Image 1 (cartoon, chains in turn orange, red):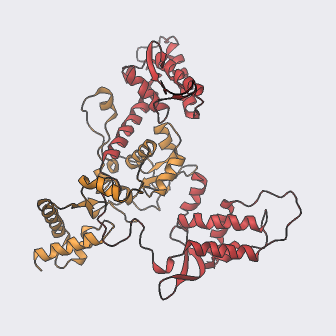
Image 2 (tube, chains in turn orange, purple; image 1 turned 180 degrees about the vertical axis):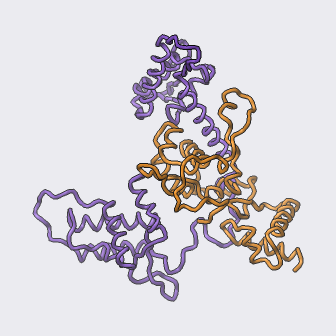
Image 3 (cartoon, helix red, strand yellow; image 1 turned 180 degrees about the horizontal axis):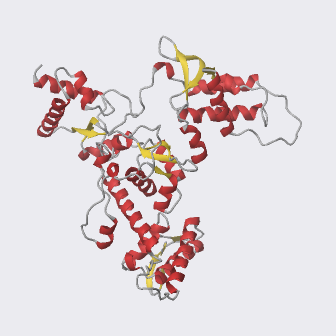
Length: 207
Length: 281
């Protein structure tokens, strides 16, 4: 099968899948293509969209590809769907940031960092599918552990958690210099023991 | 018009030009909590966070709380706790330093607070950055092809119409009609939480139960009606947590029809729904 034909199939598959679809999955369906070829084809597709001035582009989020409208067209799409509510309050965003960078994290830890109660905000984030319960910390009280979801990655345009911008080093903030930066979240040593029943987080778990 | 402390204007509020002395628009900066407020005070006082003039900052902090109280705003407990913490730090800084051996470590009483402030600030910034990213549903949108909005496509045999749920509930209510009881003191009626536990226990015994079966019961604390209401809510809540699934049959045209049934859902075994009751409800 020639490259053009493959690329069109990739385009059709990505367009037809509202959820992000991984390169591996695409490679299973597209004839004579492996994941590496898929990645090339997607790059070509995006280049093609760019050259022809398409209003769409392929993003890599939550471990897969998703077709989206370009940012420039946001005002028009908002006019089309005014009811959509994706407003997140400062409290929600701060809480989300703590969960994203420190996961798995307990409610008490979140409250310690933010200095305010976290319960209602957490519930809201869970309802929106941005945060989920990941198990317990095996200490007295067995508090719940929270983490972000694949939907979180999708909403904020992240391929996976490693894509989170590094948290600014605390000393750097105070001194105002460009000091060394904190390691990205997954690389941080997690002092909390994991719940042995929880599988270790992969780069992306579809849930 | 502003409330000033120490000769420096800290909070400003402006009168609405309007009818009468009671119409004021208060432009009070909104803070996410005591740490946020402290960061603000540190910034406008232009002091170094590593060398906070505790007395001055504490004074302004308390002045802010006073202002909130004057405006009848609710002051969350955390703000009061921080006020106490500041007072404690201030007192420690006033204590005469003991002359110890040369290597005696002097722990700066402000150290812990400073660490918390810096950590909070890092996350506050991170939150701002997250907000700035192109967001799905606000700045960018999925190029949907045919599929309806955000709802995941339901499997045909699991679709239950809300109307049918309510209809089933109504039927049970009618069948279970109790004669009006003489007014008497009753125990506290059964709670939704208890119902949730009872429903899940029932589902562990019987794999599939009809929805109406769950609502009907011979006896319950507070009366059968109380049970029905609580059970209805419990089933909805458990469905939301995916601890159970509600489903109906489907006729040839794909319209849901027939008895509504309930069975254990994917989250039934993880027990997360159980924890969520205590944590969040």
